Image 1 (cartoon, rainbow, N blue to C red):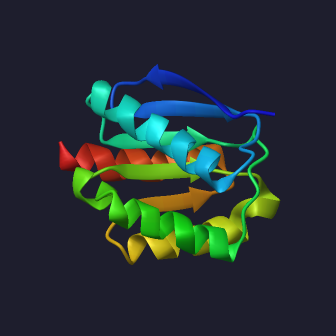
Image 2 (image 1 turned 45 degrees about the vertical axis):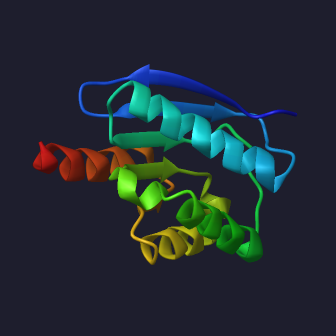
Image 3 (image 1 turned 180 degrees about the vertical axis):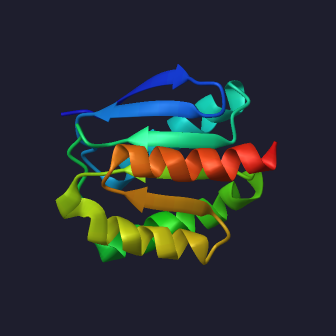
Amino acid sequence: MAITCEFETKAHYLLSTIHGSPETLDDFFDYIMKIVFESIKEKRNCILVNETDASVRFDVLDSVLLSKRFNKNSLQFLGIRVAIIVQNHALPIYKHFETSLQNRSFNLMAFDDFEEGRTWLLRACVLDE
């Protein structure tokens, strides 16, 4: 099943709701790039990604490979902040991914509670304005 992204521009952030499942690591990276390009188009450097209805599966090695691709594509220089909301069982691997990206100066925080993630993102983004 392919992965799809729905976008909604909010006052201080871009909301991306994800459905489906990426079949490969390339599909996963492509889905991330769709979100990045939409944030640039909408002039939003704060993104709230809701993956609670998606089936995204990756492991520690995948998170390292994805982080390296982020670095290779210089995504850390875009100044994007991301709060990603995931299913509770997926939170540990996303926390590893979070650390890998933060070590590369990319600001991503993973949450399993929508309001907690939204609150963190708004606090971080409104302070920048």
